[in-house]
Picture 1 (cartoon, rainbow, N blue to C red):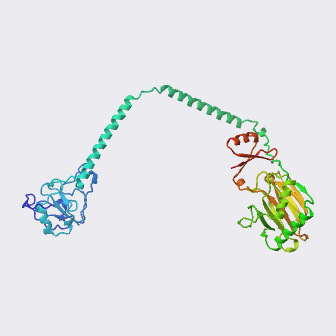
Picture 2 (cartoon, one colour; picture 1 turned 135 degrees about the horizontal axis):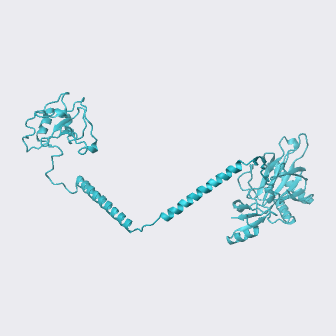
Length: 451
């Protein structure tokens, strides 16, 4: 810091600042020596910054930073306290590139940061004032909170009643002792059992394997030959003949299909996602008769016509084993199939069996009808096998009638056992929550919940 009013300084009047040489060191700056640069070869003892002025106070011949500038900065001596400072450490960073003469002028009237104080009052809105005030407030607040915390802790400690835990500790010790004795006795009994001479004679009881479930449904029912009248038979023949000749059928693996009425989705379907055409009046009349003759609870609203190619067509003619267990089929409805043209064998195979499945065969002759319950699809698979090689056969038509509903797609099928509430009890529970229960099956407790 340059003080223009101080023309001379006793502390510097005897010094002539000169450029220091590499052999000069800060420890040798005294007497008539001038500000110098730390030589690059100087190795100084490093002091931790947080220990300056405490455990390792720097010497006056060393800068308070306890480091070295490697000869890149001037070292100035305060004329008032004699402490040496790097120019940068004394906030004189601009002196690094000044010549010797300019630094000599600065040294005459300069006071170090420890000795100089500003003679003018500081504005309270100045950044340094705000920071200092904030620091003081936070320090006081911290001290107050710490004292308050200590006071509250002491008050709580004195106000809480004291408890005698000796009785509880005694009970815990006794409990630990009993647990240890029990473990020791258990280990002893296990060791005795393992070392018993009768171990080789011990035969574990046989494990009874679970028996497969017994079906409560028949694979098919309502089989009737020569079901249709001559007029009905001719009307359906003409209809499917036109559908075949006009190319309305969609190819699937082993057969062709066309759908009418409500949308019916199933595994392997290649039908369009568009809404199917309405049911033709010939099939609508068939549905009315079937509903009345078989006393169907749910009138079919979806019709899937299957065409099985003849032997000379060069195409496969079969239907893979499957179950009509789609959730869209109404749970307590029936699936009705009417056969036209060629006779074909229908195979039914049990799903739940011990060893080989139970197989039932049905010959579906022209103008015959049979039905399957939706519940039977949980017990059986069915399909139309491929005829043997070299066997001659004609085309076959099957018209399958189903009752489907989107409501059934959001349903839950519960199958109960001995631990499950009986259907009657469950119906009472469902009535309270305003759900519609549908009891299925014979001895099996099946309940359909419509949501």
